[in-house]
Image 1 (cartoon, rainbow, N blue to C red):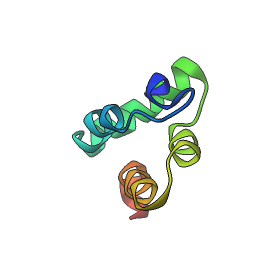
Image 2: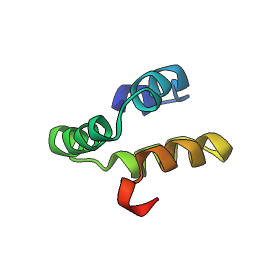
Image 3: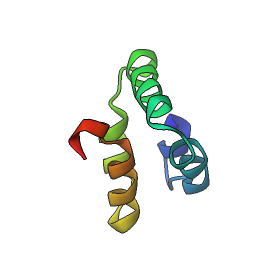
Image 4: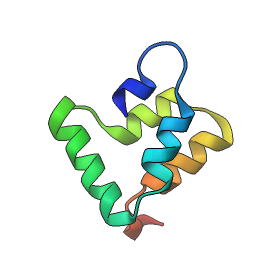
Length: 68
């Protein structure tokens, strides 16, 4: 995920494959691992590296299910 968002241009196909196809349980684990392994917030990174409706979609997917 970090590699897909790092540098010029975001690799949307990688973000799609990893984020859109996962269950809520998987997403919680992915966010925790992202924070633990590279000490960064996945939602913050996604928000800063994407834009428009695509950004809204990914951020909604990453939201804690209890906040939807």
